[in-house]
Image (cartoon, rainbow, N blue to C red):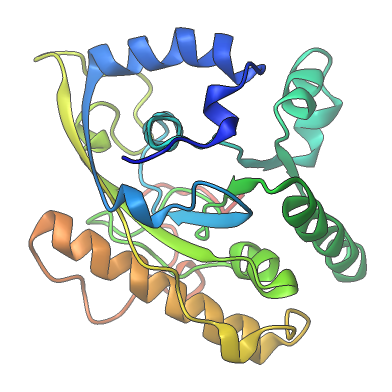
Amino acid sequence: MGSRSPESTRPSVFWPLAAIIVPIVSLIAKIRIRGAEKLPQDGAYVLAPNHYSEFDPLIVAVAVWRIGRAPRFMAKESLFRVPVLGAALRATGMIPVARSSSAAAAKQTLKQSAELVEHRRGVIVYPEGTLTRDPDLWPMRGKSGAVRLALTDGIPLIPMAHWGAQEIMGRYQKGLSLWPPRKRVDVIIGDPVDVSDLQGRAGEASALNEATTRLMNAITVLLEELRDEKAPAERWNPSTHGQKETGRLDS
């Protein structure tokens, strides 16, 4: 996969975490990665995967680590106030999600984007915001968090899709399915989504909507390739389709 980033070759807090997590996940899942070269080995990026299983963050984290980058996620601000957990999140450079007013959220996005560029870090952001509500696990309508970060400072916006984690833990399933062992999970990373014409317009709803549509289209195309089938013509929209199958609300 080429030369590895200093993020994975220099000692850091990620090393002991990887020493524990990677072997465990490898016992459960056989992860096959395509397009690894499309994830930059240096500099900031926003990686946007599909989300359909509570287990898939571990798949994404291990895939990113194997490629050579440190897997940093966005996490709810409230988690950063939990003793021990909050310290661990800060130590690993995780990014708090703004849950406040739009003005405060915009200010926080500016700060987060600048820090990604300054420290040459990447972040993994689920653009759907929660597990997809689509009955067949296709990506649903996206939210603007990922594209806000990317548009603010021109950070590469990289789509990612994976398929197979639902065989390990189904959507809303409480436990893991560990038989037979080593379920196959395919991961594919695509070319950066071109939003250069929208750069610097992170505060405009029209720009955010257009960038989010492009991103979700790119993720869906990658997933179609993995599944070897076409996604529905209409993307699932929780606000219009409702929550009949689970009764759960978006986080």
